[in-house]
Length: 94
Image 1 (cartoon, rainbow, N blue to C red):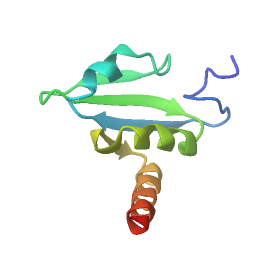
Image 2: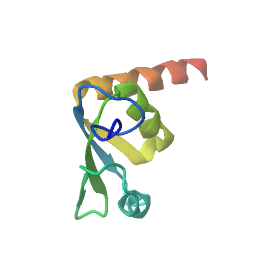
Image 3: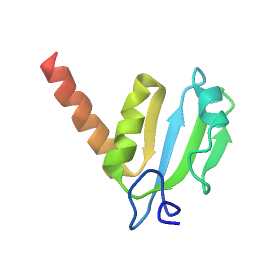
Image 4: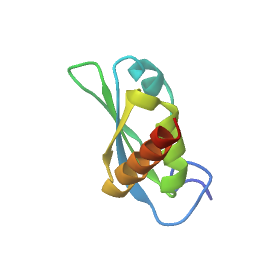
């Protein structure tokens, strides 16, 4: 029950997240149960939209970054900004 409210190991208030995944990895996204309240929508171009509640933007940020160019945050804006900041900081190091 502790983990039922949102994705991952944190608890507390939930934030609804929408992430678009490319058609190249869509099959892997569709086959996994990320959360019992998840919603996966298949798009005409073969990509998928994953919607789920999370309790920690930091935790979902790590998941999104692990998919690199194949994942695009749609909502919330704060998560989108966190990803952008991380990418910029990485770019500056390379």
